[in-house]
Image 1 (cartoon, rainbow over the protein chains, first blue to last red):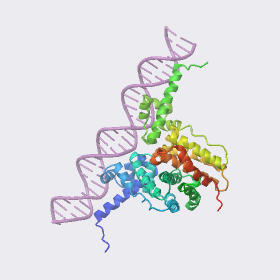
Image 2 (cartoon, each protein chain N blue to C red; image 1 turned 45 degrees about the horizontal axis):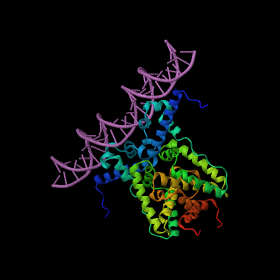
Image 3 (cartoon, protein in one colour; image 1 turned 180 degrees about the horizontal axis):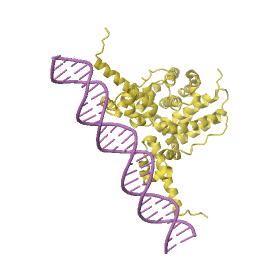
Image 4 (tube, rainbow over the protein chains, first blue to last red; image 1 turned 90 degrees about the vertical axis):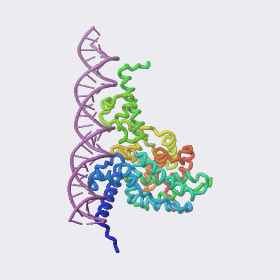
Length: 188
Length: 188
DNA sequence: CCATTCGCTCAACGTACGTTGACTCAACGA
DNA sequence: TCGTTGAGTCAACGTACGTTGAGCGAATGG
């Protein structure tokens, strides 16, 4: 039953995947500008011209490599939102997917990547805001988002030892009250 | 009494400042890689060779442009620390100094800049930790730091409209309980 | 007044990049 | 079996970059 792909198409698919893997790794490690087509090709064991032939341009290669953005979560109530956000810490901190890391790093340097990242964050803020009461829900949701963003950047990009030395659960434990404080309109 | 500088030295000083201003602006706007010596020189109304002559290399130019890191604060208690951090929001959000923004943007792309930024953040974490009780003080301090970092990046680099639409005081108001929650070892 | 300093420019270098077009050769379909 | 397709390579292009060394002309100081 397992349809054996004909060697031609299979090889094509495999090479394309190799190129994308190499691209994601490099984009994530050194950002958009410092990633060269030649380096991607070398890492994929392939001629630079082939990368161009498959993806057309460096921009397009980045677009393909940065795809697969994490899906935003459903409408939950405030406490569940916090739990969900903290749950993503495992992903964000343990082993952020190369695609997301590539986007995270490049969005701060490369304009086109920045636009895509802004959209993704805006969607997450929208979802979060639906679970937060009050008329400053969107602002609170935005703050929760950038808090998580800061932790991720501090961990993944800046590699702060304080954050790397402890398990994600420990970080989640300390972060929970902080995020909860952002959801609730305090009794003042 | 005002010692008039001789035209020669004064011109020198002025041109050097023009170059540094242009460099800071460009580094902040497009990051290290995409900032070219030629563009800096053009913005400063000067020949590219002069930039090299004054600063030796692009690396050195960046080092000079990124200097003047904000001084870390004194040893205060937890509440005062939070107030101080929130006080810096004005600077971070209102009009982040071009030097800091240049470093903020470039540190995510450029290795050498990243090292400098890491050091600066480590110093801030050290200072913060002295005002926090408990043995996880450094972790808590690190989290407070990356929270502020996230807000700054969300505002300055990603330009999230939710954050840009409100005055810094509003952000500080919502952020205060969140930061306070990070300082205190809760009664569990 | 004249030799010297020095801010500054000009023209060029070597290099690395993204990208292209012509090519090779194995897999394919009829 | 044979012409065609398509994966993959090769060599080269134009361009932009960081960087250099020679030179110009005005300010300098004795």
